[in-house]
Structure formats: C-alpha cells, structure tokens
Length: 111
Length: 116
Image 1 (cartoon, rainbow over the protein chains, first blue to last red):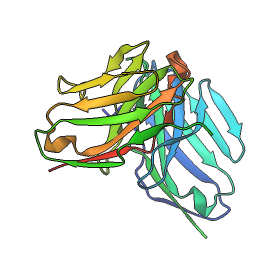
Image 2 (image 1 turned 90 degrees about the vertical axis):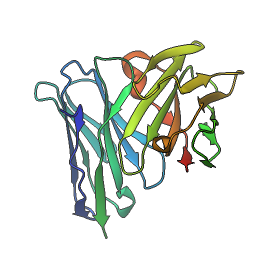
Image 3 (image 1 turned 60 degrees about the horizontal axis):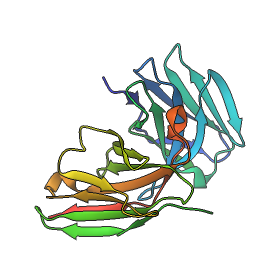
C-alpha cells in the first residue's frame, strides 16, 4: 500500500475556476501535512502546511485535513494559467522526521 | 531572499566513478536534507543531517552514499561508485525547524546526475 496517494492527473480546469487536489495517506500516526508545487524541471516549493483537522486558508489556497478519514486536500480558487504545475502532497509520518511525498497531481489551467 | 544553492546543475559521469554534489544551505538553517527524484517518479528522502551528524537515512542511502558538512557553509553528498540507477535529480533542502515542523523545507534547484 502506497504511503501517500494522489491521482496523477492531469486535472484540467478553466481559468478562474476552483481546482481541487486530493491526497490520502496510510499512516494514521502522520502528524503534519504539506503541499508543494513543482514546475516541470524545477524543485518543489512549499505552498502550505496544515497540522490540525479542519481548513487553513492562505490567499487563494485552502488546505483541508481530515485525520479520521486520512485525507488532505488543496483548493485553489480563481485558478490562473501560472498555477499549472504538479502539486505534491507530503507528510511527516510516524517513522521519523522526514517528508514522504506522493507522486503528485498535474494541474493544467486553461485560459 | 535567502536560497539554497546547489552545484553542479548537471553532471554526467561513467558508471563506477565517484561523484560529489555540493549544496550551500540557507545560512541560519540547522537541518539539512538530501532528496532525489528519478525522472517521472516521486521525490524520495535520502538523508537528514543535524548537529554535524546524520539524523535519519532511508534504505536508498546505503554504504555507497555519504554526507559531510566540511565547513560552516557547505553540505555535500558523495556517491562512491555510481550505478546506472543513481541517475536522478538530487535536491538539497534546509530548514530552521525540526520535529513535526520538519516538512517546511526550502529546496535548492537540484543537481541532475546522469550515469552512463
């Protein structure tokens, strides 16, 4: 069973729409959760982190965490073509203080 | 804005050769990491380093790999005898936070290693 699962996509949304990216994880002891954005050929860039159940908003981004369902999501409001990238879900689990990444979801925002 | 810098950006080497990848973490950061990403695959943890010693390492980080902080600024990853499957993008990352905040990482632009 994969530790962090994401639909690889691509997820295609029109400009101005809400993009919803989802991630599930297997380790119930996971403590902290992160969303990274990775443009093609570039390094991951931290967008948001969430440590507690519920929603956390930062500008156009909202992270949602449900530990009971082992589910974390990222909403991007008013999507822009510049948001087109691969979004990586990552977590710090019970096994140690390192990040475990999912395979990423490729988002395409069409003008 | 402070950034993590990595050199070289791309290195081509023959199988069996030694490779050293270099990183300069952000100056006030205390936690240092190496991750790698094989083309088309996910980002994988290799090793973490804190207080001049390895904190944790993955199964990938076998005896062929080593890390060093030779001075106050550089952080290096050495691969003693490269294999074809070592071909990947290697990312250095640093953080000023440990524990459960350890995921708030700043990544360098990566060093692409090609083993022929």
